Amino acid sequence: MAINDLAMTDGPRPGDRDRDADGRSSRDRNQVTRSGSDRVSSVGAGSNSGSPPDPAAAFARQAQTQHGDVIERLVAFGDAVQNDRPIHASLEFLVGLADDALDDEIERQLESLGESIGIEHGTVVSVYVIPAKRFDSQPNHPLIQQALAEGQTYV
Image (cartoon, rainbow, N blue to C red; front, side, top):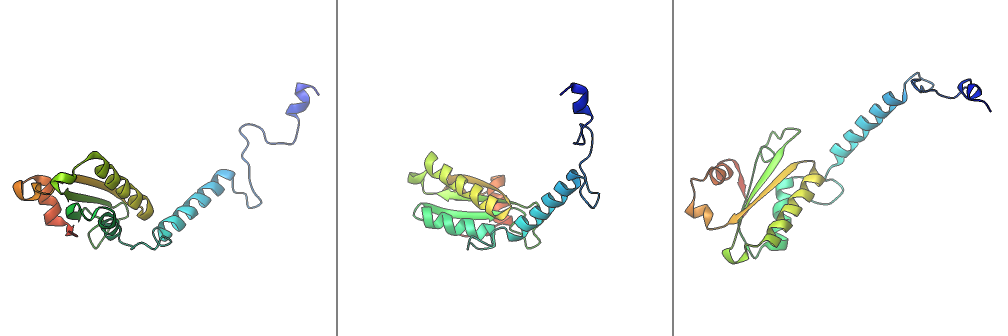
């Protein structure tokens, strides 16, 4: 077969738009599919797991189950804690651990839990781990002030 014969085929050529029977291009169909799947995933977020619909409560419950013996303070704050939660809400946790429990492994586990809860609930989650005694020794620290003023205390 000669090169000229290939150019004369009825198949799609570069630059041609692939259209369905309704005249929609494949790009249009992909956008509809993507936006439809986004709606399904955001509506169903967190509903299949059996966890509380509130991501702060879910994190607090699981953190206390896994590390309750060393968590002395746990405060959730950020716009996801507010009643009028925006679509792109963020959630922050200030976790105070017992002095003898401060180590990188527990901090990583709490951060990983926050990431999992964030994915499950479609929320950006940040976890800050500090010594519990800092709540009392540095009450004027901006992060502690913000957490206590805006947040919900679980422990």
